Figure 1 (tube, rainbow, N blue to C red):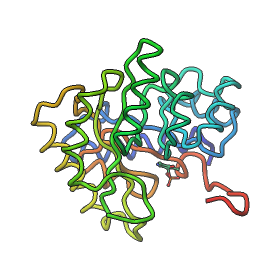
Figure 2 (figure 1 turned 90 degrees about the vertical axis):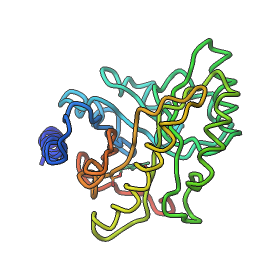
Figure 3 (figure 1 turned 120 degrees about the vertical axis):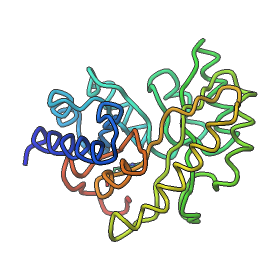
Figure 4 (figure 1 turned 90 degrees about the horizontal axis):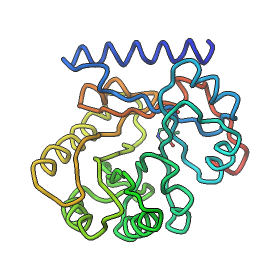
Length: 235
Ligand SMILES: *Cc1c(COP(=O)(O)O)cnc(C)c1O
């Protein structure tokens, strides 16, 4: 299957899952997880209708950006972000999905203020309480949302999660439901610099289940680009 055929298939599945949940398919943004795909393949995906690219490594994003890989699409950062690399992303990406500490909010805000802009971010929640994963524990969310008001260079636009690796998509439902509950509960409160608009959850194996639970951003790599072939020693 070509990239174009895969994108058409994923979009059709998104539409079906949205309709089954009584939702408008147009409110769901397909974020293509473009890691390990070169600029030519990313351009091919955009030409085939991919509306948004999500990268998870800063260096790779900068190289491919330099090569014009993302022209015509939105660009998001979806990977773990080290504080000292925030300066490369602020203003270049329209959304950072993976903020999980006050220190990172503060640094993104500082870089954004320098550039005279406001950077949209999501807060990453470790819904499975996994030691190996980044993201804050669900109960830490209210305190971090409260802190957002101290940083005028950021705007929290919602929540993101990467659930534990599960064998079947329905095993992820509890994690997706937890994110939605946090989204609803905290969205009702009024925090400065917080607008609860987006729920980023669901990947190739489970985006339909995530949509059933309210996801309006899904991050899909393998189902669009095929299996990634990692060099030995990398994850
Ligand atoms: C790679 C990646 C994805 C996509 O994973 P697939 O299983 O290939 O669809 C989603 N989210 C993040 C943060 C990723 O790094």
